[in-house]
Image (cartoon, rainbow, N blue to C red; front, side, top):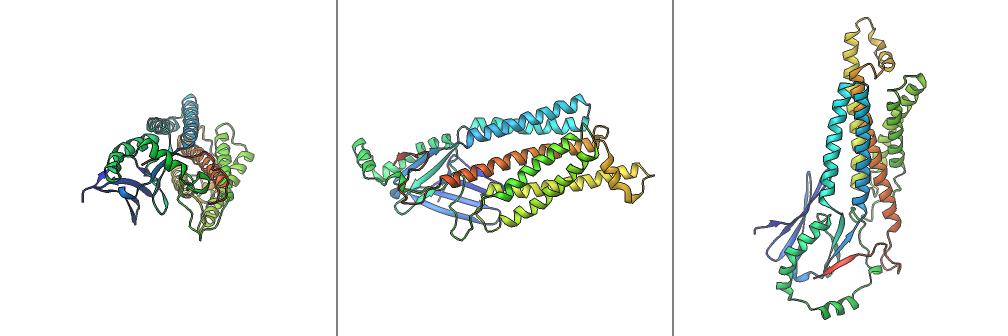
Length: 349
């Protein structure tokens, strides 16, 4: 059987969701590096397609714009202080963030989409933008009408009057899969602490461009050690708990960034130690701590990389944890009788 890929794709750190059109059904594919899950939805069983716009578009636009401005400020600072390596790295980061912002704006507003079937309501993660939802609806609506027959305005009205109230439909929160019952609830406290400490460490690192006083060096060393300890603690805490994939991926990214920074810093320290042959091998760490990034291009480049990566991961992580906490508070149990915030707008099929 030949399949045609429908518009839309959701791709994360290690997960990709797509939607395919068959002769009499659509096929939802949820894949990662080692498994693939398939779900078939036949046109004869379609009852409705619910599309709800989310605030994710405006929030991502805000956070990405802040990251662009920070990268621009670091670029201007590097140019003003004639740090060639930092200027090049900041320029690359600025170009990447600007391209990401442009792509995000071009794709348009975000949404969540659910397909109503006789036995359950299924989320279609690949339809994460409103324009994808319109394109998919234009493709499948004639096929559904060919199988089920056209529906008149009076029939739509009668179906809506007899439909289950929205307060009795428990839709999964946007961007997250329904939580399995064996996962423990988690408030992401350690994650918030990690991303907040990471931003403090970035501020302390940036302060070293202006002063290398021992208090700043000491605070930077303590904050860096705290970030490393917290990154390990968050990875332990998020195991077996209801933490969104994005937050888990950001936690792993922080650890990877720390490892890369330490490896690069060790290589730079070794290179500087070779240049300064009169320095004993046991004093290389003292030499590294005493270096002024405003006078050492390699150190300035490393610090710039660390500051940009820390600010990006810290802001993104805090935003993701706050969005997760907000969605958890808005979650309403099935049959609770309370109204669901942001009522869903649906397209009856």
